[in-house]
Image 1 (tube, one colour):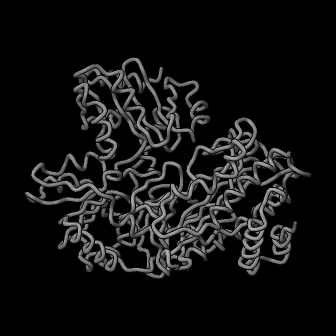
Image 2 (image 1 turned 30 degrees about the vertical axis):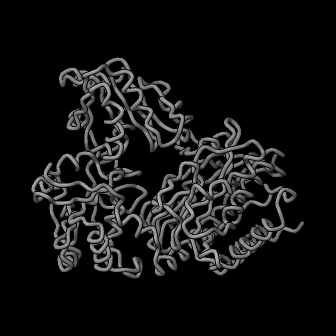
Image 3 (image 1 turned 180 degrees about the horizontal axis):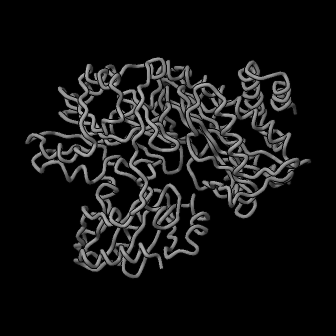
Length: 597
């Protein structure tokens, strides 16, 4: 029996509490969280990025979505925790379970820092019918986790205007105008990427996101940045102070909020602020719940950011080409595993100017592991690569010039792949191209575009369980809103595709126990033609890396799709070849040769 689970159950009894909810997140509702907040992994051994743990005296469950079903089965197999499958992404089945298993009048405990305001309201609504009390001030972990990793403490960096494109003063002025128009006189920002973008700062609190841990409060007169001040250099502190930004201790945010003036209209983003923040706001204040203004603003990359992003894509493309050449030359001559391959790719990226870190844990899935959508190899469990089968490689980098995210499925066969593999790959490619080519009217949402990437697959009776596209930050989160492309993408007007947005295009096929296929590029939304029917938009693909032509059945492609692929490969060669030595340049010329019918 897991001793920590036993201790938690003992504490539940002592606190007259009948169930405990533990979401996998941090107080800022981050996707990638510091080791300090990796409570779910510490307690259960499950390392997926999406999880909600529920504990009662006779049940311990880990709820996760389809991306992590295979991983969850493996990591929870010998534990006291049961894998609970979410049937539909972005739903709250764990709340249904709590409603059904708790008795009327019982109490659910949780740490209010670790549940968003939006999730809390959903949970509260689910449980209201049975008069179940929710205690949001119950931290059962801190006392148990004796060897807990240290709280992030590395120095926070200033991001110069040559990378940001706009000064912090310009961004703050725009935010205050937006607040005034919305009729709010104060705004609390908890999301780390929004704060980093607004203040033009970056950090290194997690392995993959350059974000400092902090809170921010802004009104028309003052800005208070709640951050561990030993992390700020005197130079940056003086610069911030000169712009009216006052530094306060990170841990003082809740105490500060209790002092807000009566009648204040305080704006929070319910999806990205914890219930703990709302609990600290006095009852005589009005809480306005809406998406952070900064979320929409930072999604629209400015001219400087777009120019830098294209530079980052060239550097990233060079690293990928160097890796592919290395893999081709060394496969079969030395032991290469999924893990050592991903490590080698990281080393090629690290050679590029202004590279900072990977943008997420590399997904390097060989053969059957490629079917695990978010598979992450470890040194101990990684499969060895051989001269047969498919290798799915999803990776990205953080550069001062931007964030990259790209997937290539590579044939490791000495000869041709199987007919099924080639057919599946070509259908995925068709979907990728159809989305990349599409022109659409301004105001179009991601869910309206999603079918383009799935149509060829659907017609063949095939589907994939993840979204088709997500927004990407500028040297920030590799996943950011408000836009997304998928069956579950929001219809909110703020999520419409707009010029300057950077979005992924990544359809796939996953055959459990056999292989996975995904092709991913990043695209910038751009203006196309304006007609009597209005302004039309489209996508400019900016990722630069050849697509494996040995896996393409040309007879399944239309002439328009072949033209797109040939044009894309010409761009890849034209942009990358000046940065390569002759041998690599010759290799790239072969990989990007035009397809003819």
